[in-house]
Length: 166
Ligand SMILES: [Cu+2]
Image 1 (spheres, rainbow, N blue to C red):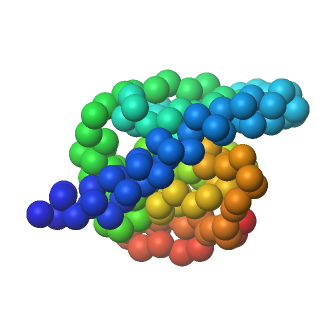
Image 2 (image 1 turned 120 degrees about the vertical axis):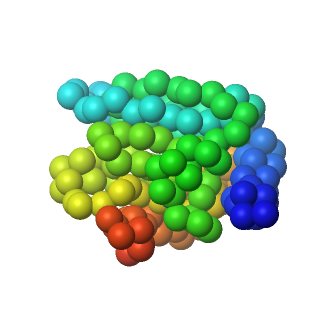
């Protein structure tokens, strides 16, 4: 029951929205990548767990790559066990989960926040961006629709505090 709720709350709704938008976004992302600064060096590898059919997850992978992260994709039809293994808090889930330098990164977290995390090295489990906010990396829409969103830090005890606002 708990698993099912998790999926309904975070996965099913999110993936539907994702599939609708992802195709149209590809062109915009490709243009943005061309204009992106030269990839930085020395970043730790990111392992991204996602469904093979998740378009916006793939776009977020592209976002990580253009930010200079070496990315290894782990496609899986069921990513919920990964979230449980890593300790993603209930209700804070999104469509994909990454593992970077001992931290988890849940959802469409901007690469700049991940880089800040790696510099600050807090005693924490990771970062979460619950749901799939419009305008977050990989969730851009052609008409420029975006919403305010807050990335949260998951502390060692599993509680969350705001980390960055966009
Ligand atoms: Cu997504």
